[in-house]
Image (cartoon, rainbow, N blue to C red; front, side):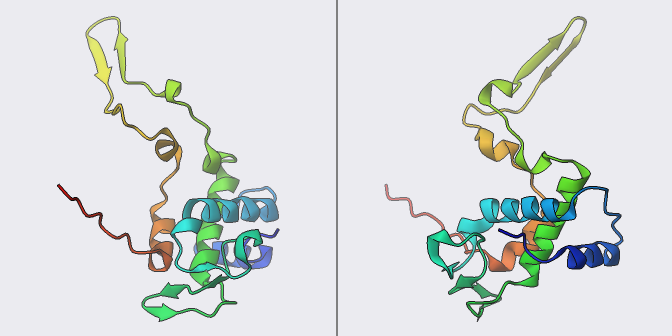
Length: 158
């Protein structure tokens, strides 16, 4: 299973954006970046994987739309490729940062230090630990926004 894009296209993208590519395996970073995109956004993309449930990547998709236009079932948007490149760059800069592992016991609600210092963190009892551990990369969110399903507001019946 290959990551979105190619090593050469990733390096050209990085150079055009003024990024310095840290040393490391670009192919492996692209793979991890693509996995991050698919795992984080795959269910939120419009349409369905063209190859069904056994398709390795979330794209290409059948029935996908962007900006109100239908996309060809063999098409992989540049936005997906570039979002995967952003994630790959993050992974090259800080290996493992896209797949943080946390548990509820690692959350700190309050700490007290001898003396007059006490800190309380805004942690709800309903904190979704998995969501709290997932990095939010605003450029990736922006790139993929036109490809995501529009959330339908819930209806509250009383």
